[in-house]
Image (cartoon, rainbow, N blue to C red; front, side):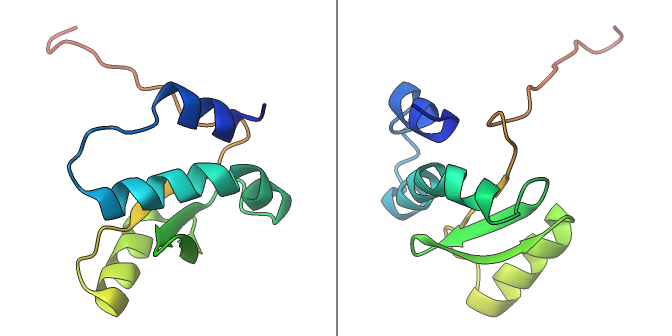
Length: 95
């Protein structure tokens, strides 16, 4: 089982209430291994209507382009990494 399949198994629905966004998120993880093979590693991709519609190393530029092109739509934006996702480090204020 690749990392994309594992992520879908562990978090099949994030409960956002937005089914279109959830489907774009699931589409990204189903395509994860293919995206790596196609050279997207280290790039942010935008998945809309179940397919990659744009990519960039600059997340903000990507979001701006996608929203300019399609309007504010429930696209899923994620960086393509071999091991899935970056780990978040959350620190308390003042620490």
